[in-house]
Image 1 (tube, rainbow, N blue to C red):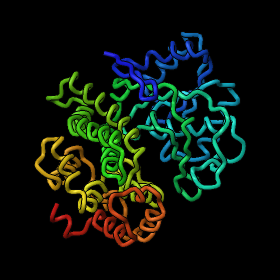
Image 2 (spheres, helix red, strand yellow):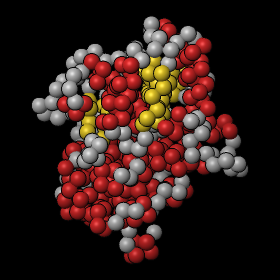
Image 3 (cartoon, rainbow, N blue to C red):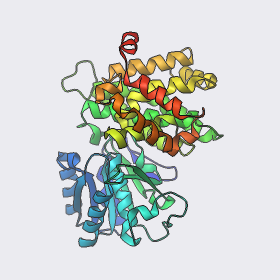
Image 4 (tube, rainbow, N blue to C red):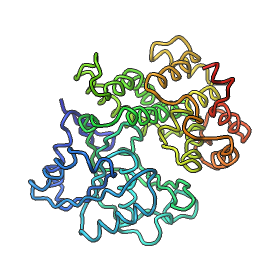
Length: 395
């Protein structure tokens, strides 16, 4: 069943929802979409079918698929060049958070002069005040929720430091959540992006400040992840017995919703997990979702002090007794979906520690953390997450 709702983005969700893209573009008077995706999605059959459907509807799509890894400014500039050369009139971001973030950043460059990072979300930056081409988002992973976000995260090619571009104008005008487009995802990608979504939801709920709307959305999203991430991941493995196709597809739909809800909820703020994950991406080029997934139980243990009631509320929602049992549940979930226990398993070493601490401390996300974060705290979190022989015996 396909459903439609608005919050405030116009969202069409359900099996086959993306098939409505050609008619939507025509209804909007748009004829030359730039399709922005990553190298992996570009090879998938569903993308070929989608482009063919656009051509059959007398539209003229152009494919830009030079997105890979953590998205960079050079990728954005190349995409903007493609938009101009083809005289495109809208942008369709298809893929994970990287592709959708690049799509949004391309939109900035079309009518804004100067360097992309002139428009970084910082004091004294230029305003994103010119026309933005229409953006349509079709996520194929359930992680960042960028499809409903007002920001784009792009890395500097030289320093690898992530820059945030922010404006309500960057919110896509239409989103299609189609679980069938996630079916070709490897189990490892489903797992890491799913833990990214869980991290957004948890950090939003725990973030300091009052925002009951975001808290409610976050709790419901956490419930969806608890119900569906393991099923969605296990079902991704070919020839897995005991996973019903309808249950599997429903789990993928749950995860798309949960990812989107996480992006809505973290308007309240994020926390120390994201500051540490951003450092790991900058210093070690670690996949963002994997970084969050490895770190999560250790950062949640750090945040438990003073937040026992909130952790109990989370635990109760997913059928557990108390907050500490929830942290144990994260460890168990990671094991079930085959996420590394320690950072050392992802080639992070003690030699990285000092730089990781410096980059994480300079990252703004931990400013919203419910517990103040000092450099010594970051050093301890990273050291525990790295894993020692003593820690390994405990796990």
